[in-house]
Image (tube, rainbow, N blue to C red):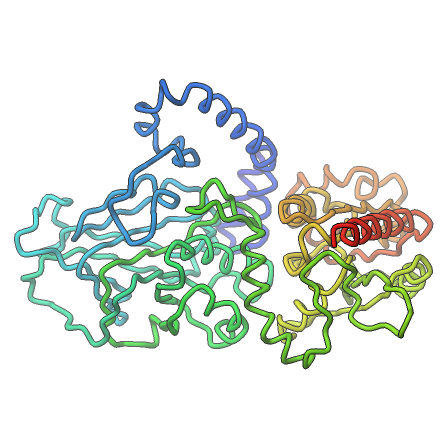
Length: 510
């Protein structure tokens, strides 16, 4: 109760980031229990599915994650039974919005669809003889009026307040206002926002690129992206990926005043979980590995240009070190994602030497906001292991090769839950060998600021329970790490042994 009160105080006070993490932290038990609960439900339902199947779909809201049992689609071009159980069958000239999901709303339209950016609206003109009872008349010729903010953090009220709202309006065709088409599209539209936390690489992938993949994959690139809060830099940053999701240039909804006409449209994006794709919810059972394979196809041409064919082929599980002297055995390549300021490894130079003594070829990479993603991908795709301290840059584990690579996340005091939830579990789903290294008190710079018996050191969970502002100010903004190399060396050896074993297995299979 205290935490929920604190969340409301922070939300009303405008501290969106603090409110976000207070909410997530307060409900962390739900996220821990959810996979087990769903597994139990799935097993139970599978055992009696043939008997109870006719009753499942009367509870579509409660069982929205179980619609793979066979909801039929009579709607859009894609197979929407994997996206919208509440709107799985929509007729021509109709609008259906699914607001049952915790993370995002999503609306489906079919018929004569026309954009009108000056009023932040998308109109659907119904046939002349259509039934006006689609919904109660809203205003004159309006048959239905929905409002939606197409961003995937629906539960976070404070950040959603910054997202542009879109009107979805169904009208009679014979209404006085009839926007003529300037551009006619023969493929569906997916409408979404690149506002919110865009600018943070974790949120760009978790809230944007991966949900865009989930929502648009069914169309096999035959789809147009219509973007609210359009940013040229975002389109340029992800210019390698976007053509693999859509074969058409994206539309700047606010900046393009032309009327764009479609016959089908989805507004909003689906999101499954943190940095992942749930194959149960996908048309062709695509997983996060399939998304990662898309990244490989997207970046490989650019990488080829960057290295001018000097890079060794790294598609298999052979060691990926790109350069070596003649007759010199390959060394596993270890990339250290370096930080400066908070959560930096203050004895990084000693870490590099220790890793080299074990047998790694060490590369230190410090990504900047302006660093080209293809260059980061090139480094990590050709690596065998990555080390980094918990933070948004750990999102780059997505660039590592599944089943071949080791990800070691250094976990500062007070960040155990976030490190596991946002990066540890998703990395395992990708197929990486994940090693979490929880630092001891004496490896934290906080030991110099607080008494040895202070709860900051002895009981970080009690501080976290006070609210995200404590976690942020103490454990994220004021903490650096000095690794105990005697202790950490064991993780390096474990990683080295794993990589060596994978390499030998690959040689035997070759």
